[in-house]
Image (tube, rainbow, N blue to C red; front, side, top):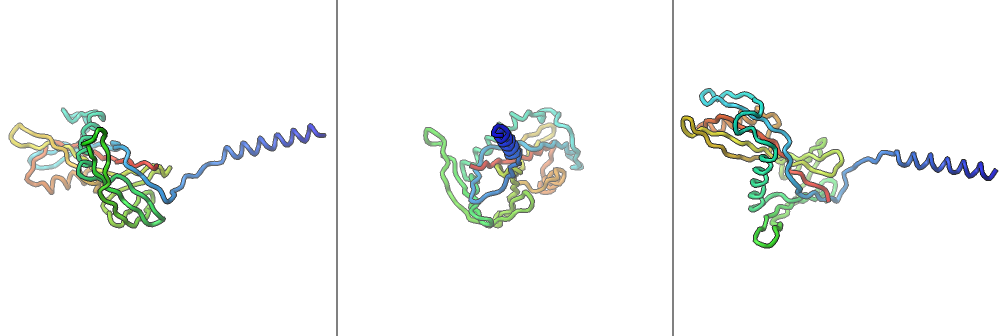
Length: 217
């Protein structure tokens, strides 16, 4: 009788342990929590050819001359631009203090010492709310920030464009430009670039959507 009781007790324990291990852990957004800049990530890339006379454009595959650039080369360019941004001031972290209040820390990169360090320059309080996975900052409505489903990372969308500008017949020069993401339709972005720079003639524009990843720590 005693051996049967031990067996039943053991079986019950195994079933309970298996049930406990199989329970799904549900991720959740918690406050207070801080997300700090970690790295850039190339999300999407589109290349457009532009007729210099009509200014009509069409999407092409990324195989046109020097625009056929690997992700490593793009990453090097982005890192140089980001480092230059940090030398003046850039968003370093976001702290969510409560369910509707946050604080943004802007910092400057100091390269004068043995090691590069960040110097906090400004902390700006703001309200915030969620629209699906998008975080809407009350005082920074121009920021397009999404939180991933694990709530461990924020994706702060940036728009980079490498533009081939015609400077004289047969001669073009390439320049990188950066903006906050303003439209998730690349054709609309290209149309806006062309219309707001009417005097500039473009051969090709490579549009790159880059997420600045902010990791929870």
